[in-house]
Image 1 (cartoon, rainbow, N blue to C red):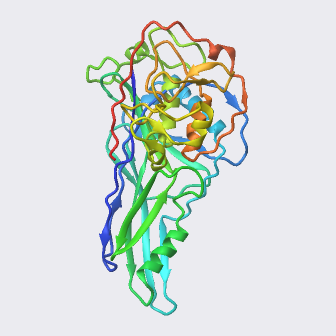
Image 2: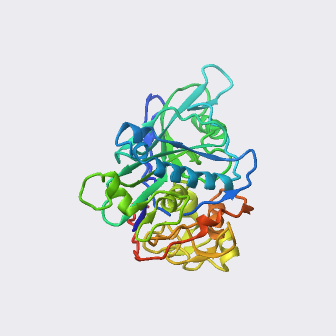
Image 3: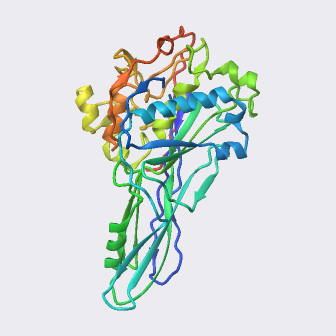
Length: 386
């Protein structure tokens, strides 16, 4: 079954006149991919935390409300990722980033009014959020379910961002007002990966705003028999294995593993500026953390999607030190569960997250894998724009 990624679309670069009150420079989000397993880690007190938002799901098909065991598996996957993150994301206290220049009145003032946008996980439509404030270390993940079709089990990716511009002319220069706004900009979060960069110009003077980890979305297949309709509970349970506390049933796909994989995609793996900066050609990786662990970065990325590790790449499971196929390759076998590996954490660090690796071994029941009764080779659909 495939775990399909979604990534942010390209921004429209705006050329605007200073006295035009509004310019929307939006970057829409697409999404990315899938897979993983449960363990408990020691975590510091000040660190990034993924917060799950079920509001889109509740307003539409209520997949997680109707399948509480799936919700528990998702929450366990997110908790396990939260436990390894040590990044300190700065607070975003205001939607508007203001730039001012000039020593005399009237000054030149530019107001960059930011917004977020993401793919609604329950409808597939683009959704805009005008309130961009976030507490320190808060990352919001919107979740839901859709009819995905084919062999795709899930999709996910970081959200996009944009802004409207207003302002006034005065004695100061536009370039200095832009520089002041860039210096006051909060949406880069101060730490962590760069998800996207908003660029353009105001009356010929260029601006550039890095946007860090803020929001993402992930959705899961609710039409496992591909008949075009949302599955009944019995149909879902015939394909999905929802209970993350017991071994995966033969012939079923582990929801916990898929949720873990997709959540990692929402953090920028396969769909962020930081990722793109380290991807060389179709399959080589330039990130020092992966290279130090793997020996080199040649061919470690899946050349079909450009958003995963190469199929079958092995690493060491952090829960017990045993070998395992990485979480972030594009495949998952029925009847199996995956857990975070050293290489999965290394590639998070390469794109800008900081992690810890000290782990308490997970319960033995979570380490027992059922016999594989079916092998499904996953071909992830590429949905990113370059």
